[in-house]
Image 1 (tube, one colour):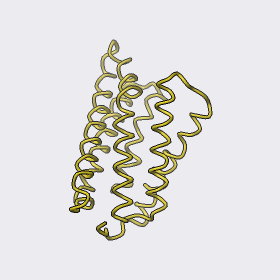
Image 2 (cartoon, rainbow, N blue to C red; image 1 turned 30 degrees about the horizontal axis):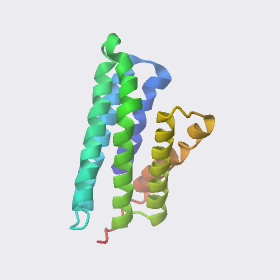
Image 3 (cartoon, rainbow, N blue to C red; image 1 turned 90 degrees about the vertical axis):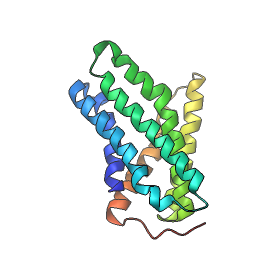
Length: 174
């Protein structure tokens, strides 16, 4: 189920591709609910004595991210507020996504419920995304930075497919 939700979370990308407001509204809402659903499903899996604080931080970051996505969907319904959707995604949502990804991949690494290389790949990709985001804050934009987004997207798609086929291993406490 988590693998399906990871893929569903990316459906928010449909609006920028189609510019269809009704479809964008639906996919933003679905994406937001998927983003919220993932940590809720994983909460018991990650809830070990050593991971308690990190697990709560992960949950809070994803709740914030999901609520922003849902808000973005509602902003599409009012033409004068539509530009705020783009601002939410580019200026606020990205930080919730990055922090949630960092917490998520640390939790995956600590619990060893997926192969270590997936966790390390995801953590490196999240840190790379953070660096790219900071560079863009300083006005640095290039095609290379766009290409460097690929490791995050590829990792999440790989993880989603992995989970749909293989699932999680039994957790081990750090």
